[in-house]
Length: 85
Image (cartoon, rainbow, N blue to C red; front, side, top):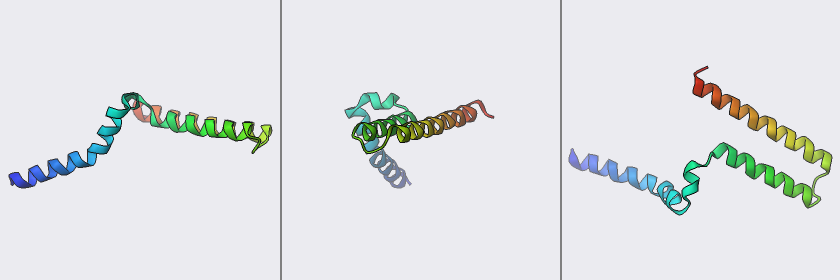
């Protein structure tokens, strides 16, 4: 029985090792909101595409508005889940 528990604990730590290593290498990622980080990356990619001339200003504004609305909806959904609604 002890061997099974020890085996499960070892498997658990092996599974968490990559996540723990990323926190050790980048401690600020521990407090980083993954939803906001994804939103920020998508927004920067969109801005880069506009600055590189790959999309027009009208397309940029439209996509940015859609991205902002999507992020705002995610925030509202998370706040509703936290408050228990």
